[in-house]
Image 1: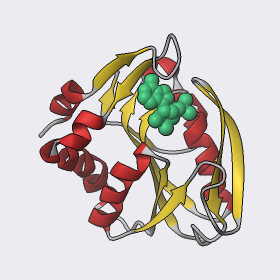
Image 2: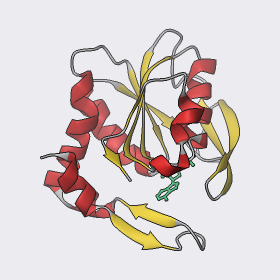
Image 3: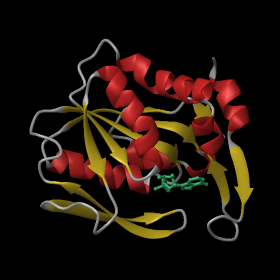
Image 4: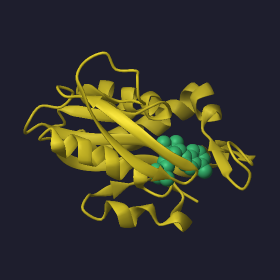
Length: 173
Ligand code: AMP
């Protein structure tokens, strides 16, 4: 299945979660096992031949695709979560969003020094979330092999915040 079939399944929801935001809803992709598999394959297969130690994934939609990618690559999972969710010692980063601002945490042992890390989220908007997360991984000594999104909103130029890293997004709006 190609990225076009996936693109067609993504649902636009106007004015969510705030007026003026056109939300890209990926739940129809998750609801269809063929589409979900195609999405995971697109993100995972390009890394089948390189060693990935950890897939870092961002709460909450990043967990869905990220877990599939980690399973397929035989990699461990590093969770990047909102405040108050992780029980152990954490490090955190705050950043601006397309709508509002946010803080993300990860456990201090989520990534070990020298580990090769793939970062996965559902969508690249302004790039703030991924840039902050990449910073956390690097703070722990991880090496970012690539940052992957199912969807990129190119008109928000999020790649500019991620210039230091390889970025892959098969579906572009
Ligand atoms: P950003 O930090 O601006 O790149 O925002 C990316 C994060 O916000 C991702 O975790 C997305 O899930 C979410 N997000 C931002 N804008 C949208 C949008 N228009 N539709 C769906 N999710 C979005």
